[in-house]
Length: 124
Image 1: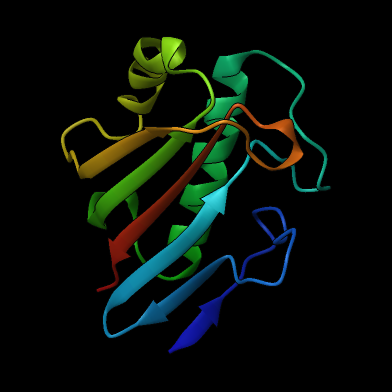
Image 2: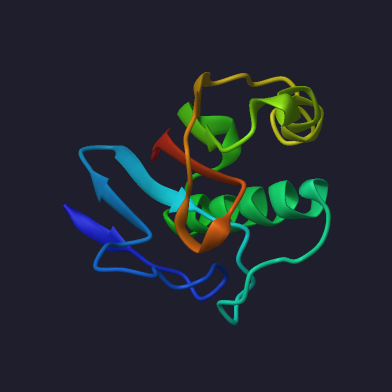
C-alpha cells in the first residue's frame, strides 16, 4: 500500500492522503471545490463541480490511471435539487465510460461545500 499525492490538486485538509494505491486499485479521498492554494471556488455550481472533477482527475492521473479506469464514484450533495445540473456536468467527464455511482444527500460538508466527490479506480 502506498499514498498518492500530487501538487496538481489541493493538499488534504486533514490527517488523510489524497489517495491510497493498493493491489491494483486506487482509493481517492473526497475532493472539494478547492483551488491549489486551498481556497474554495466562490463561483457557480458548475464551476465548483468542474474544480472537483479536475482535482480528482489530477489525483487519478498522478497514480498512473485515468478516468477511463474509474470503477466507482460516490457523490455527496447538500442539495439534490442540483442533481440534474450535476449530471450534465459530470457527463462531460465520463462520456463513453460510465462507472458505477452512488449519490447521497448530506446535511453539510467541510468548508461549506455543496458537494464532495470520491472514487475508486483501477491502476494498470
